[in-house]
Length: 202
Image (cartoon, rainbow, N blue to C red; front, side):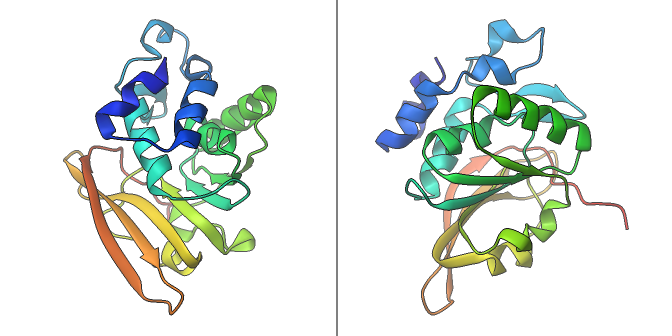
């Protein structure tokens, strides 16, 4: 099962571990990849996008440092798997996806599985100001810089977990945290490889 890989990332948060056990990863994987659904590697989901490997999903979920009932924004809904894990942790999840077909597919699956995730279609660089501030923001694709709107939409004490770096190369997974005074601190969490965070044309 997906949870067996999280020890490779040193994840110990019991809510993350339980969520990884509970979410049926095979439901988020396209037909033809069912036998590989629980391997610790990314898989294609169409439109040039991927579902992240379980150990990375666990690492990022723990890095958010959020509690049940807190409001989280995910940038890059993709298959819906990361959103489902956050929902299984008890978070109030908002998720936005720039590709309408992926957003619709993920929203239908999350609803079918009983995960109360609010899904929107928009450019992730802008966040989702309508529902801000957020107790945590997680980005599942890599921009070449940190979008200022995402920092601005964090509540005091909240963290942004985001891979940053060049497309097609190794990137750095960062945690940016805003303190009560509005100061931002940064922590380098790991080296990762994600698909690029795309922008709306114009």
